[in-house]
Every structure is written in C-alpha cells, then in structure tokens.
Image (cartoon, rainbow, N blue to C red; front, side):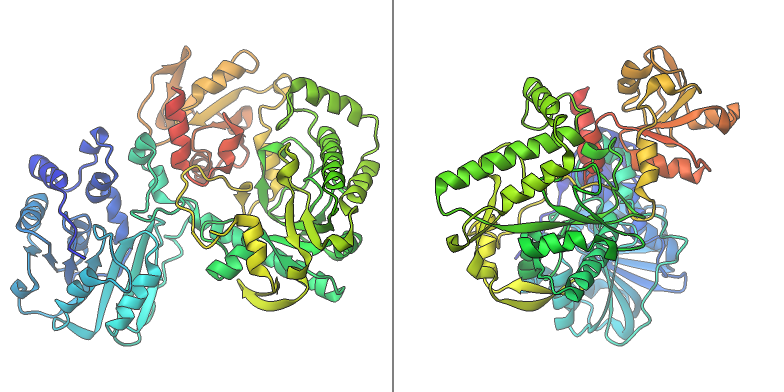
Length: 635
C-alpha cells in the first residue's frame, strides 16, 4: 500500500486564497474531500480536548492543515509532518500568521524535544486494515523515539475503522485505548498510551444532543452529500444507539414473560442475521424481530396484562391498528411515529415486532388459496384502520373504496379471528413454517422455513440478552436472504427508519405536534411559520387561503430571503424585536430539517409548537442529506 496521492486541487485552493478556513470559497465547491479538508467545521475535531499551552504537540498526516490551526491555538508548539514539499508549502501559506507552527516532510527533521501529544490524522488514508497497515505503521515507527511512556497519542480517522485501528495500535504496544466521537462528525477518535491512563470524559455541557453536527452545515445542505469518508455512516447514528437501548429493554421484558410462561421465542430476520453475522445489531439497523410458534403466540396475546408500566403489548384486538397479523411490544414513554399511523389514535412508542410461525399446506393449490384469503382479510382490516387514505398501498382508488365499503359490514374482532384462523390452517406433515404477516399486495410475500431447523436451539448472547437461536440458523438465513447473506450491504443515503424516534418524549406529544394543521377550519389563532425557507412555499400553497398565516420567520444562521408568495420573510432577529406574545399565535415548524428547527425553538423557550411535514416520509429518513436532495430536485 502506497501513501495516498496528494490532491493538487486542494493545494491550489490554499495557495490561491491564502487563508486559514475556506468556507466562503466552498460556496462554489461541491467536492466532499475539498470541504472536509478546508471547512472550519473541522475545528470541532479538537476544540474540546485537553491540550494546554505548556504542551508540545506533533501532528502527522494532516496534509492540508485541517486540524493544525485549532491545535496551534491550544498548544505551545505544534510540529507537523506532511507527505510532500507541496503540502509543507501549503500549510505554511495557510497558517502564515501563526508563529508556533513548524512543518516538515520527515520525522528526521524534527527538533530535539519530546512530545506530550501526538495526533495522527488518517483523513486522507483509505486503503488500510489490520493486516495491511503500511501507512499507519510508517507513521508510528517514525516517532517511536520521540514519545515518552505517558505520551498521549490521538488517532483520527473517518469511517468505520475502529476494529482495524485498535488491532494495529495494539500490535505497536498501545494496550490502553479509549474511543471518542463526541461531535458525531462521522469521525473516529482513539486516544492510546503505553501505560494506564485516566480516560477522558466529555463534559456534560458539551454533549447537548444526538444530532450529527455536520447535518446543520450549510455546505452539506446545499450539496446534500453523506459524510463519513470512505465508509460512510448514517447521520442519525447517536439517536439510533439510544433507540436500540430501548429495544433491548423491550426484548428483555418480552423474554421475562415468555420464560415465566414457558413460551418459545426465536430471533428472526435482521435480528437473527445480526446475532450470527455481526454479534449483535446489524450496524445501522434500528429494529428487533422475533418469532414464536403459533400456539405460544396465541398464549402471549392472553398474557398482555403481564406487561405493565411503560410496557404495552399491542395487538389488532386492543387497538385500532393492523400490522398484517403480528404484535408489537411498545414502550409508551417514547416516540416511534410512522406516517401511516400519524392520524390514528394508537400507541406509537418504540417497539419490537413479534411474528407467528404458522403451518403450511403441502398442496400448492390449497396454499395459494390460503394466501388469497389472508390477503383479502388483511385488506378489509387495513380499510377499517386506514380508511381515511384516498388510496392505500397497492390498491388503486376504486378497489380501495370497495374494501372500505365492504369492511364496514364486518366486526373488526371477527375479522381478526378469521384472519388468525386462516393463517393457522395447514398440514403439520408438510414440515414447513411460514410467516404470513407481511403485505405488499403480492401472494409470494410469505416467508417459508423448514420446521426441523427450529427443532433444536442453542443460547447466544445478543446485546446482553441470551436468545434461543434455531440450530438450523444457516438454513433460516438462506431462506430469508439467499446464499449471499454474509455480504454486508453498502451505505444507502435514502435509508428509512421504522419510525420518527424520540427516546425521551412520549408519542402523544408528537401526535399533537404533527397534527397542528390537520383541521384548518378549527384553527382560530394566527399562525407563524418558522423554518429554513426550503418549504415555506409548499406550505403556503396549501394553507395560505385556509388559515391566518401572519409571519414567515427564518431560523438563525439562514441566508436571508425577502419574500415568498407575496409574504415578507423575517430573520430571527427581526422577529424577536417584534416581541409578539407567544400565547397569541400558533408556532408551526415549516422546515426541511424539522429536528434542527425543533432544537432551536426549544432552546429559545418554546414549549408549545407544531410541525408541518411537506412530505410525511421525511420523518423516516436516516440521513438529512437525503431530504435536502429531494428538496433540491423538486425546485
């Protein structure tokens, strides 16, 4: 593996503009690598750390000076080793006003001093792993005689290289390690030392939210690019980590009830795949799936009263919802709203899915007829729960109207009873299990498994919980995902979650917030829209003639807009000067980035506000940059 090729475009920009940070130039730039190396957002990489004025700092591999500037503000002396003479000249030009920075192309040229901190930047190094670590080895070997036993080395990288880096560093004798990424920059930060040290804890005042700070950057919004380097990560990673904690707690509660009542529980789908391939949650996944034999599944429904407090076993019997015929165990103190259920009065806390394993007909004609009956009953139940949609999923308007009309003729409980009876039909001698709960309009949506693969189980730790894994897990995964299930999928910027999540706020609060413009004729007070300006027009086109919208207000940090559809747009400061009493109007977030807008309103003392969704599917996006891309395409 060779040292990474120097990007001459970046060098030319530095030499042309000769400043420390290049955000003004970046208004005309769309290349992610240029942004990452020249934007002031990289100050976040170190500005919170414990480097002091009496420290000598060595930086290796920061070829374009992305972090050199902030380090020099913190330390007494900063020596930098870069790859080429061009990089050396560029950093000298970039930080020409700093008198405590010295740049070299070889560790042999360093002054005779020991270093308190060494920062190794792997920003521009892509092709390495623990078995092929030439660049990292070269960097570390070059400084081995310049560091003391208690010198702290900080290794900075992008992507998902924790495992490889930890092994490489361990092989170099750094047995004491601590990984940090407080700023959620898609950035790995590993501090290592030869001897034990007190691990650095991020001050509570710094850790304020789960937001990835890059999402709020105007450049990212304009260019709608994912961030994270060669191995891109989702922008909501920290939020999903908290969601997974709730789901594991739900799994533990479900196991408690099942074990107390001798009910069998298996991991299935992505949970089984994660347990066997990834040792836990699939990286980037956000749900837990389990399955039960039909008899045990039916007994669990009868035990719903055993779930108390925040735990709620949601079934088609106890709520006006329908999920094709499966159950959810929910946490009622959290939020996981799905657009399909936004206006349905049901529990939408974070949940895990529980599927019944049913028997199958050996006769293909009978099996096909069974699936047709299941689909018919599912459609009738969908019509009873989601009749307010003009059309639904695969059903065009006229067919959907027919199901809504016919569905009114049947009692919901009787329909659910009949659905479960139909799912249970089959021949035990077929040797097959199936999950019939999924729906997309096709008859081939059922998932089939061999019963013998579930006959024996073994215990395996899954995120701290012991699960009974089917002994035939390999066959189960092949049945679900095909022979290539071990291959990990690449990053998908348009990935969608299973709900709009909040681990600290109950779903009832967001149900109210999302319904702020649902019934325009009932809204008597004036409305003020707060946003970034990206969807003001979309909201006004639909609501301007139906409600009294008196102001459009841009959030702090937005480029000033003059007007939209004849209405003046106020900056945040201009609006604040008006001192409009908050009880006199309805505050509605109208933004392409509702989470950022919500955070700003909360920080400014707003307790009551509503959220307008220009596109309800946006609430499910894992990556805000995907939403900016959709907004840009719609212009």
